[in-house]
Image 1 (cartoon, rainbow, N blue to C red):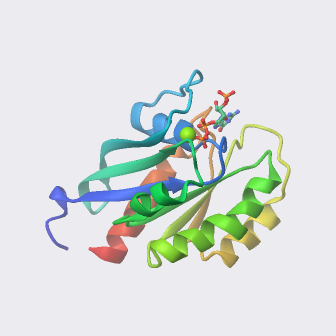
Image 2 (cartoon, protein in one colour):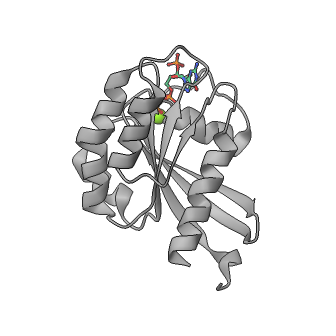
Length: 174
Ligand code: G3D
Ligand code: MG
């Protein structure tokens, strides 16, 4: 293992509008669920130092699309240099998972083919519109390294999700 202490890993988070991307990142970074969050235009970049088992301290850069999720020009620069991808679906809206299959995964594969993907099934605190079986089969289909059920509201598995993708990135690239 190289000197990973100085590493800054770029991890991006993608998915349909309102699935909870910003809420997840904010919850992870500050431990707060920002209920009054209003999306702005552009990209938010959050920096967080984390401590990984058997690896040590790593700095991760979390890139969060702030509005205009499908703006093509912005997406290219968004993807450049990313080492890991969190793809988020909203358990209360089946359509957001259909779009992962039809839009987000092809898009990710086109721009950063080798980056590991973790699939997040968010809003696990609410009533679901799709089954675990459907999510498992999507996970397999898109080659997700793991599937994590999260809630940005309660904080369920949020830290774990970010740690999993960070560990995967380090194992794969460093
Ligand atoms: P986005 O960044 O993907 O567009 P946001 O999504 O983080 O802006 O979240 C969209 C809405 O979903 C927000 O509601 C947010 O509070 C809510 N939300 C996000 N994650 C969860 C979750 O895990 N559980 C619940 N119950 N709600 C969640 P508002 O009403 O502020 O638009
Ligand atoms: Mg957002």
